[in-house]
Length: 234
Image (cartoon, rainbow, N blue to C red; front, side):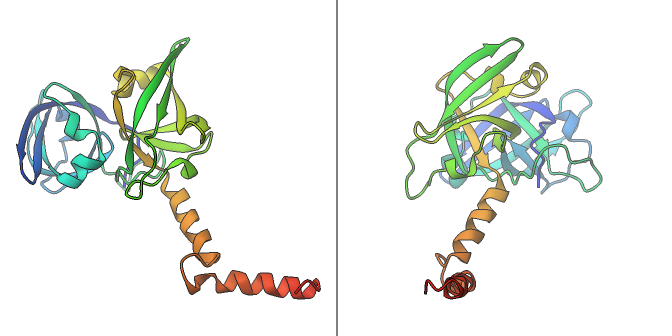
């Protein structure tokens, strides 16, 4: 589990590709390697990845992660090049203050930056989803103004949602612009999106209660039938 509060910016220093996926080496990572172990989870641009090797140094430090083809297809990590910066966050410890929102670092899909507008020291960004498919259904039902969304691993507040255009917007204050990669992404760039997990659970629970998931809906149906009978409707 993660919070969506980016700890550090690392740099992609090597990419080794083969038929099953690829290995990324991420350098300039010493601030998050102090308590690192093989097998630890680190969110890289919002994707939960497993540390396969690492080397600690006082100034640099690096670690490697393996990206399966599923990860490459669902995230922007396959587009990263040597020299690119990436957002890094270690898995949340039980002893730390919880400052973001519940982030699984399981990327749902990607979106495209379609607008950048300066607003004083802040930056307003608008993103657009591709048309939904059976493999990638729309995430718009989980996005609401002032709700949460995770973009490239950063927990951000939605400032606007337009279901018709499949667009949504956020605003980055100056401090956040300096701490994450998102402020540097140009129009046309791809970002990783994870919708708020609470919304997903609510949707599934409601569908089950209404009978869309099988016999689970009989409880709600029975209640409605009883009310209608008392009202003399049924």
